[in-house]
Structure formats: C-alpha cells, structure tokens
Length: 459
Ligand code: F0G
Image 1 (cartoon, rainbow, N blue to C red):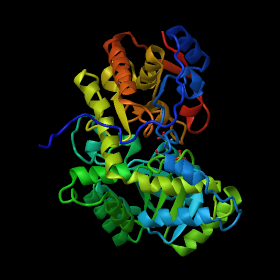
Image 2: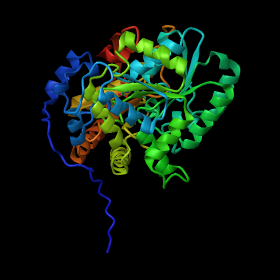
Image 3: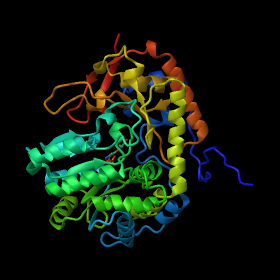
Image 4: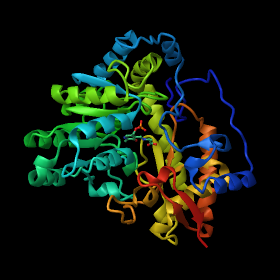
C-alpha cells in the first residue's frame, strides 16, 4: 500500500537554534517611532519574525559550515577560489567569473563599464539596486514586463516574462544605445514571478538578431527553474540543474547576488563570455572589490557558496521552498487579504492599493501596511511601491505602478508555526484596514531613498 500525504515537510531537521525575542505592542510602537517609521531603521532585536528580505538571511547547512573549515585565505589563487569558480561554471558555463561581495557590486562594475549618458538598459523589471546602478551612470533603465505582470490578479503562470514586441521595437529604434539587455529571474520587483524558458529563448533570439548581449540578473535562478519544471509544457521530467544550464546558454553573462538561492550570507559574482569586457570589469574589480580570485570575499565565503550552489538545485529542497511560500500566500488569499497571484517564489506580496483604497499612493499605503504589521505582531516586511520607486532621476515624484508589501521568506529559517503566526497577524491587520492612515516623508536621501527615509503619520 502506498499513501500520498499533503503536509509540507521541511527537508531538514534543526541542528542549531537562535533565540527570538518577544516584545510588547507598546515597545514596538515606541521602537518604530524612534526609527522614523522606517522598518530598515529598527534594531533587529525588536523584530519577532523578520521577513524584510530573503537576502543573506537563510540558514546555512551542516555541509556549508563544514566547507567553511576548508576556507583557504591565500590572497591569490586560493583553492577555495577554484572550487567556487568550478561550482559557478557547472551551472553557468560562462568563460569569465568575477567574484564580488554581493550583487550590487557586480551591477556597479558592469554598468560602470557599459553604461553612461545616452545609453538605455531594458529589463523585464529592474530591481532597485540595478536601476540605481544604471541611472548612476546617466543611462536610462526601462522596464518591459508583459501587461499581466502589472496586474496583481492575473493568473498568468509566468508573469515575469518580458514583452518581446516591446523589446524588439526598442532594439530596432535604439539598438545602438543599448549596451546590454537584462532579465531578472525571478522578477523580484514584479512579485517574485518567474520567466518562462520559452520567453527566455525569445529574448535571446531577439538580442542575437540585434547583436546586443543578454545578461541575467539571476539571484533566484533555482526558484525560477523550479517554476519552469512545474509549469512549463515539456519541462516536468528535466533536472533543474539542466534547465539552469540551458538558461545560462541563452545569455552572454550574468550578475548575481549569492545571498539568495546559493544560500550565502554574503557574496555575488559577475560572469560573462566577452574577453575584452571581462578585462575591463576585472580592472574595476581590483579598484574596488579586490584581487580577481577573491573579489570582496574571504576564502571561507567562497567555500560556503560552492557548497550552497549544489544544495540550491535539489528537487526536495525546491519543492518544499515553493510549496511553503504558496502555503502562506494561499492562506492569506483564503482569508480575503489581497495578494499578488500566482504566489511568487521567495515572497508573498500584499496588494496595499487594493487593501487600503482610502490612502492615496503618495501617502504610501504600502508603508502604512508594513508599519501596522510590525506594530501589531512584530513582523517586519518591506514596502515595494511609491516609497521605493516613486522618486525619479529628474526629481519628480509619481506613484509607482503597484503598491506592494513584500513578506520575503528567508531560506530554511522559519518553521510552519512561525508562518501560521504571520498568517494570523496579517489577517488581523487586514480586518482593521479602515483604521490605517497614510504617512508623509519628512527626510529622504538623493538615491535609494527607502533605506533611510523618515516618515510621520498623517492626521
Ligand atoms: N537583483 C535582484 C533581483 C535582487 O533581488 C537583489 C537584492 C539584487 C539584485 C542586489 O543584490 O543585495 O546582493 O547587492 N535583493 C534584496 C532583496 C536586497 O531584499 O530583494 P545584493
């Protein structure tokens, strides 16, 4: 007799634990006031369940900690570097791998080399640091996600896809000004939504026809490949690692934050095929990050990432990972909380515009919701809306296309009971949505304002 069970089992057991600190609503109200109502400014000790980001916050495995003991800290030519390079090339067989301390350092190097005034860089949706690094060179960052990607209720299975006609049109008109096309897998700013293999093949064909290189922003490549495995016709029998290698083969290079799918607490890389561009990038690397066999990383970090990369493509892990994110999203959906659907890979995105129609976009409904979740239950999330994307390089402020609050799930870190608690907190706050009020920004820095802005409640 063989049975089928539906309970999601974490494919690991707990080997070392970290305490969580319980706080009171009074303490949390005081803490968020002192933080200028910006969740980035809290002391993490004052947070009970931290869903601010899935970046660098995952639990490393026993085998990663063991690999750390093999870290060789030679300045040049460390064996740890060669292990790391081999692990990267096993999945992403680009000619050159350039290690960096995290993803945005790879972006900074790439766009310093290829950006500049008059240039335009299309993507499905640029992540905030990618957009900022493109714009910092004077170039223009353009988002070309399909229309369904901007509709929180559309059930399209690959809402991260790029609009191929729009890409072709842009390259026909301004191809000479486009140094690279980027594609973010999964599309973080658009709801953690995947890009299909078919779309990636289409993007690649258009780029090749116009002679423009294609770069992946591949932070969540394994989750994206799992969605392809699960949702795309003809892909269900393939090994995820094999799908990843095909995706890499469609591109000419990649930027990577190894703080996501590769289970690093720190790390990243830039990889590419073009020899001349690689040399220019390596020279920039030496200026800012370090020698090309360690970048901004210690030998032990390189070891942890090499091991993490092999764990990231495990089918048991990915099945658990995607199903447990869906568990949170489906429970909120059933409770009537508006969420971006289908549920993404690394996070559940609450639709603050739908939940708080009485708060104007530039009174920041997402920020109001994120603050309320913290005050109510000590749950830290992040606004992805007009606070993050409302300010433009010309100084103007416009509402962002979506007002979202992201509940990002650190990898292998929280159990199902933590998530059940989050479901209770979000549902309780949503039931009281009418009582929430907007915010005004009383301080903002010149770029990436969401990290350090300060707010005051309105009315
Ligand atoms: N690209 C994407 C799609 C990202 O999600 C991130 C980081 C980066 C690039 C930059 O990488 O942080 O290593 O410099 N995302 C984190 C987040 C911060 O919370 O989504 P980094």
